Image 1 (cartoon, one colour):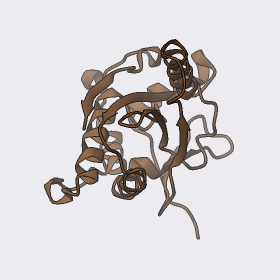
Image 2 (image 1 turned 180 degrees about the vertical axis):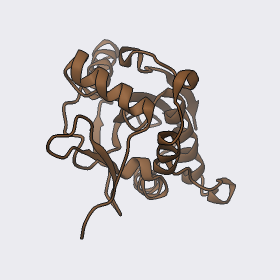
Image 3 (image 1 turned 180 degrees about the horizontal axis):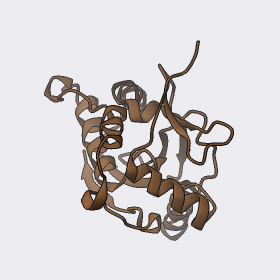
Length: 205
């Protein structure tokens, strides 16, 4: 079955150029979500799986044909998310902080290929019986701080089994195709990839 490729948006092209010609590496947008209270881990994983199924951008990989400077984005019919669960409940407070920081930085600088899934990576850290940290990351070509916040909010809604409150998912490839037919000019934020968000989103229960 032949894959259908879509052009990158002007903002994605800018990010790709910065990563390839300046940074010489691919980067990821990362956020840390503090969770308090009882947590059903299986339910969280099911919610993440539903989030990936809902949003094409979380199933989008980037493949470059020979002779092309920039890749196409290809939306996979289905793919899983990356998952790791680490128990830090026995760690001392100082060790805990260092470990969380280390894992957060590891996600930011991950060198995994953009050509293959998973796109979304989730790392759950058990801090105590009723305290958890969830680190979520996606390639910078797929999300920024604003879109990550939207995804976190939707994840909470899905976990609460209130999917009826969600609107229709946004198709980014259609948006990108539309932009290709227009002059991008100054409508896009020309910010350096080095300023990718490290925002810690509001605590969720």
